[in-house]
Image 1: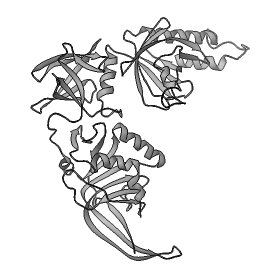
Image 2 (image 1 turned 180 degrees about the vertical axis):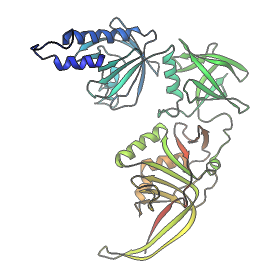
Image 3 (image 1 turned 60 degrees about the horizontal axis):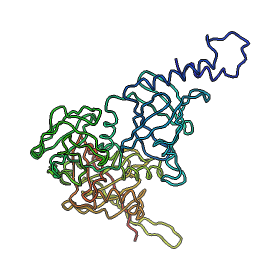
Image 4 (image 1 turned 90 degrees about the horizontal axis):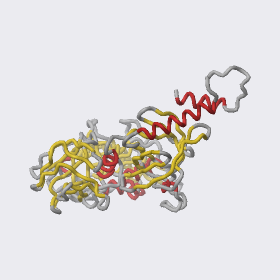
Length: 444
């Protein structure tokens, strides 16, 4: 009803009342009523509003905002806080405007990185619709849609737990987190799939999912967690250390380069399933994946084969001085190999399998493997081996020693031993027969 009224007001604002009004109030009155309703709803939430905002030139930023009498206080995942004045104004309909400089305005500041443009943020949002629990808005400049959701108690601490530990969120964070007791890693922590619990692995290598309840200062475990001889019930946010610390200071959540306990997996575990598909990866890899997709907009997925049955399709040819190609021989053979293919615009099962294929015929040796040849659309592609996206993937998995393989939720997380902020997410798939057809060109 709110949106319908605003749209009707916008359509009629310039009309002359030569016929009877459909509404019992004129357009200006209806817009003013909608603005007052929006402001009243914003001020009505006891714990504020969660605003997940993505500027046009940056990554998502999460805020919790509290509105009261023309002022709004805000916090973000990094522990920054600020205040701004705000108002709901009539600019061809209700617009929520943040008026004084704040951490929201920093996203639009050209003096901030990237210099000259900033992150493409904005601070005026057209209000499209208001419900009891959600305010739907869109950027006045970008037109992109967002929403403010009514926050629960301790929402900012839920935001901070997600921001620091959500390995599926595409953020530049370490894969491993631990509960440190007395400066020693006493348990490995993973954010639960519901994002309201923690998977806790202790020294006996048993994993327990422990729900958490967010509070006004952090979160508490549903049942105390015992690690390193210490029982921990509640964690509070420490804005100096930018992490959660137990109430008595004996334990804290910390980043780690590896798990302190055996995850029970190496590259050998990957070989138990020879065929994988990659739909996502860590933040640094995802960035390169996006760049790859921009260059090749028909990109569909990346596929991995380990010690998999394949057909090697070999074409021998020669080229004369007039660039005329003569086929000298064409043969097929079978082999077992490791391969990485980028499926761009080919349908599943076609002989070319993927437009980009990097392969190796040598058997995988322990935790190390190296791809030695690149093929693009059936032709040698040395540039593919230098492609930054390919190098990132090979750097995480195939050129690493001692990579950690973590099975979670039916996926395999392959974490680089040299940089815990880099990992791949591989999903096991059923294996077609033969696994693939790899073209090989031999010029003679």
